[in-house]
Length: 170
Image 1 (tube, rainbow, N blue to C red):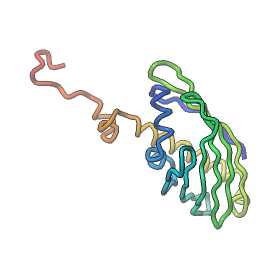
Image 2: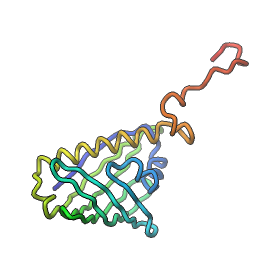
Image 3: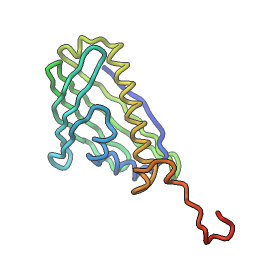
Image 4: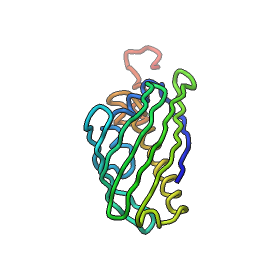
């Protein structure tokens, strides 16, 4: 199964790189991830729960970051196992600075599926993959909506409160 796509985020490339390398943030923004633990510098152990049409599964396995070219690109190797089948994938992620405050993230790769998972059907799997990609980017955008504490508060925290000592109220 081949996958590819791109998305533009309102963030500097270097900052986006740091977020994508943070396992705590990735666990929060990646659909289905229940646990993501760093094993060593580039390898993670993951537990996820995924629903694909009529098929549900709890997956356990490893993720490994390869070919890092900070802050431009990296590859992600995934091997996950469950009672409904196994997933083995290799994806390539590129970060392209569009301007000082915008970055395009593009990805492409291939996944091999086995077991019941592979028999679910290309149409269902493609739909689930597209849905999860949209959920990921929506959650990532929410995560990067603001710096520090503002990130947790969302859009309204980014508006500056009017200072009553400011004579023109702006």
